[in-house]
Image 1 (cartoon, rainbow, N blue to C red):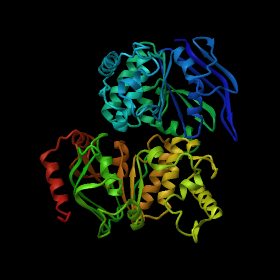
Image 2 (cartoon, rainbow, N blue to C red):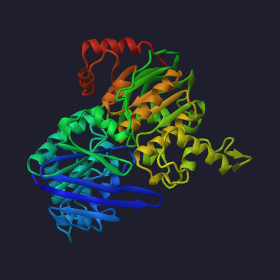
Image 3 (cartoon, rainbow, N blue to C red):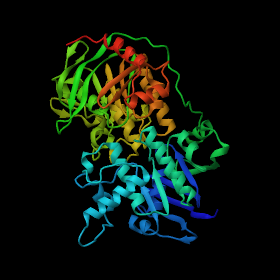
Image 4 (cartoon, one colour):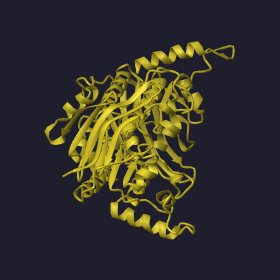
Length: 518
């Protein structure tokens, strides 16, 4: 088969952190090689070294048997390496086609936009990554932006492809399409480095897997000879519970009451259409749906970030439809948004500032209009320890943390406020199994304490594992509300595509009858 890429004793240190500690890795021609590890294990640093974003302190990288020394991603691209990043590197004001061809535009001096658009359409059709080549990236959903990143790599005809959490925002159908592409590329002899926290995906698509922990490679194994439990334990260095057992539900009174809600986007297009449901104390209500079907606009409207066009939002017996986001927070609502970097954090603020964002006006952080840095630092350190935020440095900027640890910061801030209702959108996006276990335990612990949880996730397994009831949304319409204990994946999958059986319609009708008319 032969080694296409060989990494030997690769080391990279940052101030106070040894990110990669004598890493060894080989990638064969025609194989999918998965990289597993907790957030902060050094996976992203290793990929950035291979891709030329960082230069190693020591060690060697061989590409097709020849030593390479990349000083920039352009060097790596010219050598035939393509990378799809977990966090998008797109220009929102440009079109899809402009973003894909940027740096290698057809026509060069006189940019041929029509030719660029045609090339992107051809790639979209070839790889079944449907996206409008003329659309502005800033107007696309997060899922469609991910497709643009994948198309960028294919446009440059990479001989080696690095995929960093490529399915984090894809639907199950899109994931299967991507896997078909990966298998085709593998069969054509193209080597692929596949970074994923999803063990079932690794087992479905990878030939070998290298496990990283604390900056070191701890094992390289054949996927066929391992179990998900073994891989999870290697990643975390302890026995991991892959599926948390829920305690019997003690459902209380209605806390959140959504009545015939209609929401429009900024262009006045309807995104949520007449949605009604209730969330009780002591309940996880899961909201399932394919990305782009209105679920995130729905929770933004509940949190006060989008205006309600018609209908009403009631919380704890109070009509909060016209309250500001801050006023809703004061009533006992907490919100973990889907985009941690844009909506959840101020990246240039340190962890102290981010963890006190919602509460800087109250004691002990503020007295007579003056902030108490000492109280804020103590508070931040307590949360960092409680939620295992790494590295445990309260003065580190949020931008310097891995995606998973950024998510922990947001969850810590919101949960620490002891809310009555916690709205969580994509709570474990991009997280490893150890972090997912911890967050799932936190959510179920809040449920058992009598809190109401409104969970929105594109991960169907997560929805089914955590929820007591599940609402399925399609094209802004609530298709059905089902019991998580008895519903099947197939039933939810059909509902997500807009199909609703007569039986499902009856279940929905009976559930909606609980909701009082405005």
